[in-house]
Image 1 (cartoon, rainbow, N blue to C red):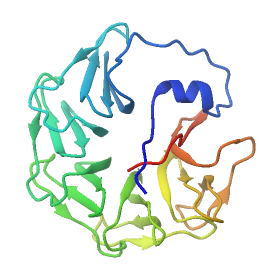
Image 2 (image 1 turned 180 degrees about the horizontal axis):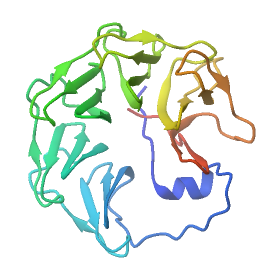
Image 3 (image 1 turned 135 degrees about the horizontal axis):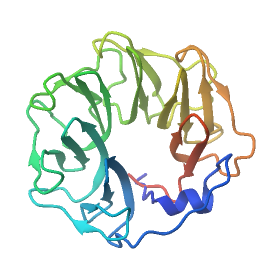
Image 4 (image 1 turned 45 degrees about the vertical axis):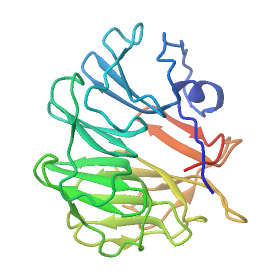
Length: 267
């Protein structure tokens, strides 16, 4: 079933679970579609929208400017930052900007699937998760890409990727999916699902040596947030206080964690 998932900062305000007190103020836009991805480089904030591309704010969200020159795919799903390079994953390809978003260049060399849903950076290596073709790896800052799917389910939908040291985790959204771990830079993957009640993984987040997995509940399976403190070997449910266990995303740092529930289902 296709899903229409609304991801925006306002979701965290209205529906998120945060264990610190905070005040949220709505920014002055952008008002051109649902926000699917955010990235920050120094004073610059990039917002990727559902249908209108990328917007940039240089004044803490007071004003936003559309920065879509060269960007054919306007449904932006993910960002990654490597030095001065900004990677944008869309449903129509992967793009790089080296001039703070003023121009974007399509970089699909070796990518067989243009629908990019997630990124992770480990040293000089960049991992990209796709909708239906698993994980791709670039070792030359995005110039070339190679599929690294040994051990992953066929036609994997990789909604999230996270790293802890030399460990790379891929969250697969599928009945036969779950969390997969690679300790050899993506050359091979092994399922690490002990304790998880659903294998539909929507999100991963790392805080220190802890990794959180957001699960989408399907049928009789239970969703919510699960925590592993042993590099994915075991998972424990940490849903106390959550009123909605169908999660879209998780954000963590050393002081707090927030979740965004799924509002409507889409692709």
